[in-house]
Image (tube, rainbow, N blue to C red; front, top):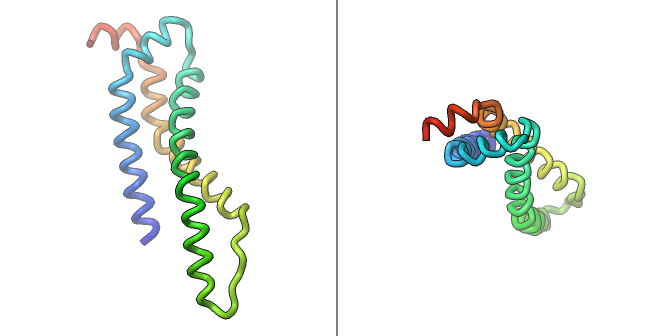
Length: 120
């Protein structure tokens, strides 16, 4: 069940990244004309998505921690939840998000700026 939820969310992220790169094609073209290379454009998009994941994690991780602690209190033998596990979860989510949007961002970063400006 968790795998299905993860796949659905990654498909949603891919759709949002695709729409964002289409919407910002002219901006990317202007950055390239002004001297930005592909790494700068990729970094610009990745920074945006990392910030969004960190904000979502700032809300979700404390709630998840509290919910798991409350759920574990019902058991006679329980474990404590290490904080490295939550840090690993947010790191894994960031990695999956960046891998999901990498294709769209690479396509936008490597596009010819003259073609983009001419088509719009």
